[in-house]
Length: 318
Image (cartoon, rainbow, N blue to C red; front, side, top):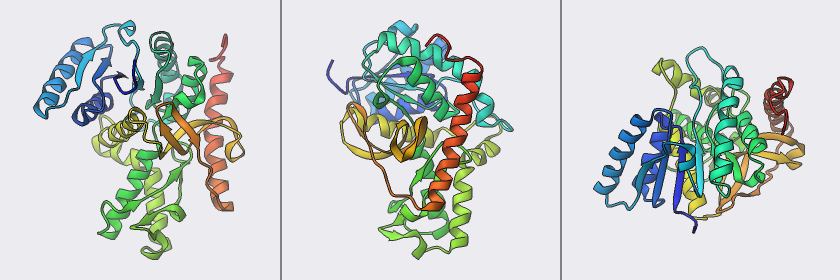
């Protein structure tokens, strides 16, 4: 099958369905296949989206996989399945529940779409990406976590809100794990090419950094019964589109490091070049001592989750 034909999405809740809708509106692929335990709900959403695609003259058709065996020969598979993060619940609380769900899903993907690039969205994101990598046996370039684009877009939105201008010209940069220890990088963030430090005070920048770290929790606090999905879904769709179109563009994504930045066998968000083969190249940016310390703390937080999985014998038999 040629690249850019079929995208699978496991989990047709708010995030998964919105990813599918975004891709259908873009006409990024010929076929989107939704897989969800609530089959009738998935069928209703698929029908609705197919009709929306027809309205904008998109060639994309949205279908439903009643079994994992129907999720076959996909070029990209997005995994959003898992327990949602509810008010008062940390991403870490989700660890064992979502690790088991991820393991089951990945076994099906590896069997029926063995050449796919997998994009993980389920939380805790970095640990689930690690689980998906180990359970699939895929090369690390084909198992990528969605986080950096989302966190960077949140930071950019907060910068725009603080400035009151510059919309569409703000380039924010965030590295590290997708959690409270993420690493926003004001030094690599600009407004129309102008350094952030030239348009905001250090106090204002510190406020934005802190708000970025808790951006997801802020939305959960407002919604009460769920978490963000528009921005996570659009961020995921951007990654899918880059892979299907083989753009070779650089985006911040979660990947398993193998010596980069001095770390190995741990997943963290770093700039990568996305193409048809997934994360085809990892970009190593220069970090100062403060940034290195924050990145080390972020990697340790992810490593602690991985260690917890290992202590619970999660990977036994692999």
